[in-house]
Image (cartoon, rainbow, N blue to C red; front, side, top):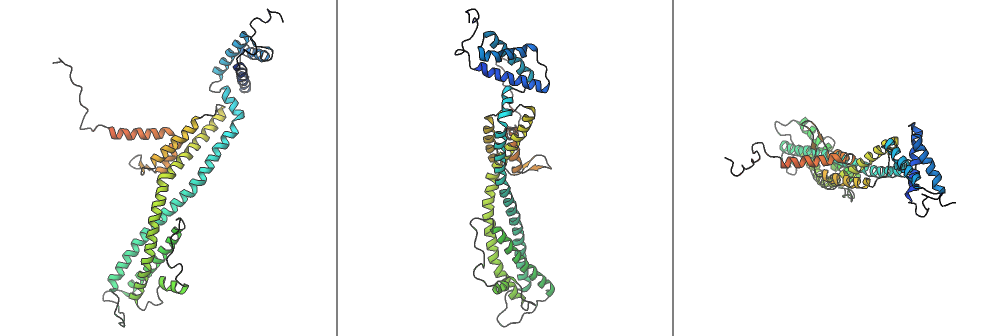
Length: 365
């Protein structure tokens, strides 16, 4: 090759490596433009085709400059689609969606059982509290109706003004409530680790257990029947109240400190999957390290939101913390708007105390 033919030819060892990268990017954009029917000028196509030839024969300054100009023109024409997003569309989509789905499935596998357990224990605990309140009222009522235990050998007679049918009805309701409280407490005990020891678990035979929880046939002595049920009720009530306390501590901490964080992370997964779907449809997806920061912000936001009770939106509507935590993960801007609104509420100047006026300038009359 003569000296004049090599004028302007860049030595291969001195040609920048990004020329080949720019050529690949330009070819991706050119192919995408052809696929969606965007017209590309002949100069742009020619510059890219000449650059492909030059990549094997040797780069010249003119070919490299025309390639970069063609790449700039294509990038501006096809924006927001970029060469990087087209590359990610073909190479990085499966690993990305696989990662998002794994995280979503893991979070769902933890959140669903924890949420169900929290809901069940809360509902059973509230019902147990109501049942104990009713049983306490019945115990007081039966005591006032029937009076203290009778001396040994004295036959029972209904006090004046007390209806036998009312007393029997109250005793039946009382015994039924004690059995219901015992059954619900045993159900609640399944959600506690370690489980509490059940009353009468190892000490009573089936006959003795029936005697303690059931009224005698015919109820010959209502006072003795009342006292027998009351003795059983005291053990059952202690067992139930112990479980209610344990459930309140454990599941209260779970619903306040852990579940909001998990819901926020799940919200972030939902947002990323939705964004991924939109970007794939538009071919604008590019992997971003900012997603890791979004998970971190969501976790912090979920932990903060969990410290609040139901958040009032209007006089008629309020949103529970777990729903807010999910929104924080889905839209981080909601979290920052919430914090800014809270700060404004603390720093707001009262209406009857207007801000001090600016002092008058010196010398002003």
